Amino acid sequence: MKGNDSIKTENFLRKEGSGKNRDVVVFAFFLFLSFVFWYLNSLGKDTESDIRYPLEYINIPTERVITPEPPGKLSLYLKGPGYAIMKLKLSGNSSPFKIDISKINYKRVSGSSSNNYFIVTSGLTKSLNVQLRSECEIISIKPDTLFFTLDKIISNSTSPEPENKLPKNSRK
Image (cartoon, rainbow, N blue to C red; front, side):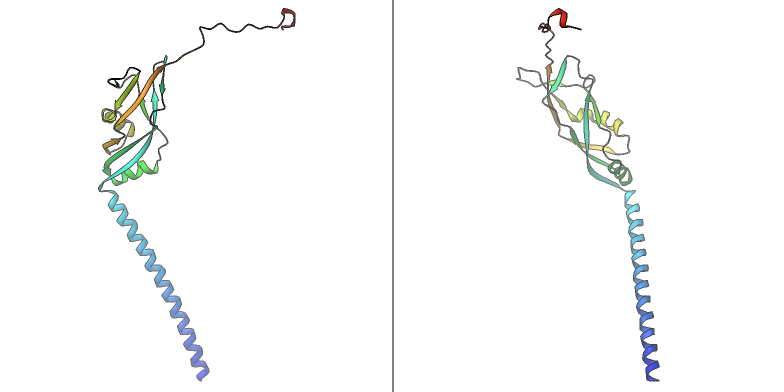
């Protein structure tokens, strides 16, 4: 009889152990589920975040080129619903912001004898909001000023092209 009691006790303990493991799994599932609901709730509230976006300069005058290479990224500090900011971060920064040189107000650097110019990025806020297509509001932009030089493109069209030195009868 004592042998049967020990077997029953071992079977009872095994069943209890598996029940505890099951309870831990159920607890972990509901803990995870409560975290998901809490996170979704927090996304509905306004939050602030910093997002970096690439830049592309368009409509540069045909006889000019921008040198040295101006900053290729802007850091935007945004305020808006958490889900909108999360959407911007998850969508990636695949499409760069376009800065239209022909439409913006760039100014010459004072005291500079060359073609040095600058753009105050706070003046780009409306354009960037349109391109952002989000419920978020741009709080600040870094860098606050973009410096660049518009140099003239130098071509070799004024120099005569070298003539072919081969004899006439060897040309095809």
